[in-house]
Image (cartoon, rainbow, N blue to C red):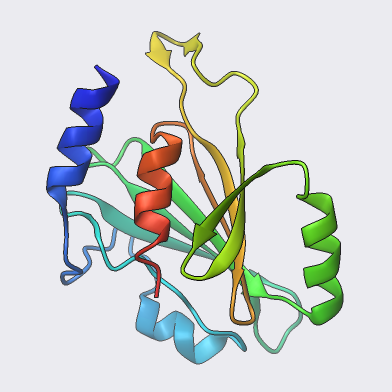
Length: 163
């Protein structure tokens, strides 16, 4: 079952297309004008997913954090979430120390850290839980990817297309 799902995800992951936004979401282009860090997005995601962008202000002048919610074709389940914000040199050292006990993975030349959910592999409301958190710093952007639906391998595959 997991292999079949992974095969379906892999075969439906395609080149970036005109992204379909939902819930009257702000667009990637609009977000880029409002933040003081490089906004990074996956180049390859399943074509049936839509995107909703949440923004969080740290002060009155600009958005400090954004959150990308990639939703399934029914717009009922978040398939993948990606939080992004600017990171300082001090924070980089703190994060590397904090995540040192997690699985290390190379993502786009950066060291990424993966931690599966405590209930991964168990059933919740009739559905098997997968995934976890994948965290890395690309340039000066902190990224934290999460999913309860995708496997670690599926998350890493998508993370490696983030540009």
